[in-house]
Image (cartoon, rainbow, N blue to C red; front, side):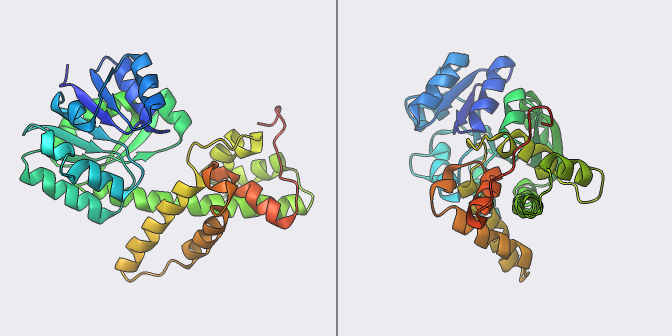
Length: 303
């Protein structure tokens, strides 16, 4: 059995990930500012921590799943953060979706403090995380990959090593660029087809048999917005954040991403109101609302 794991950040993805570790027999101490999330993990069999410092002091492994770069910097590098309390020789796995500079800074700080750092952001949906079927994009040294692998295998079914530390974060930015732009593209296509009088199930089936197919049309939209469910798995607000990470990375490399810029404008408008906290598949409902079109839905038989 491995060291005790401090799992920091129990949001939509973090809670099922931590719960899977508990179910697989790992010793987990959880910490989150949302007490209800922490209570849910405790109900699964984890131990609660009253503070970040308390969680880390008892652990030899720390896993973080946090919303954005400032959260990761504060939790990892702050004066009362992870590195201030973690014993040397521990393993740190950050599964957050953040910018490369933050990952590189955290990796460098871990190296100076004698810690092994792995970046392992997550692919796929909340439903996959709940079933332990996530995909991980791993940036790690040989040692880091070997130490992290049993933990990642307890939370997912596909572990792809992308290169050294920082490569997982960079891969996630590219992957999310495709997914988020694809969601906006899918929303616009279904809006157009609906306005033209087409059946949404037929549109899905046709596209699924051609090179027009994509994961949003075939997996995410049918499991969420096309069933009338826009409760957040991955919110429009977070999707906008991740898309902006990709655009910022492109700008730093002197690259233009005009399609991404257009998608960012659309998501920026959608997040200005009630849609900000809805699942990003609700981009379809937002587009339909703007156009005055009743949003399409799959029948139970077709879903």
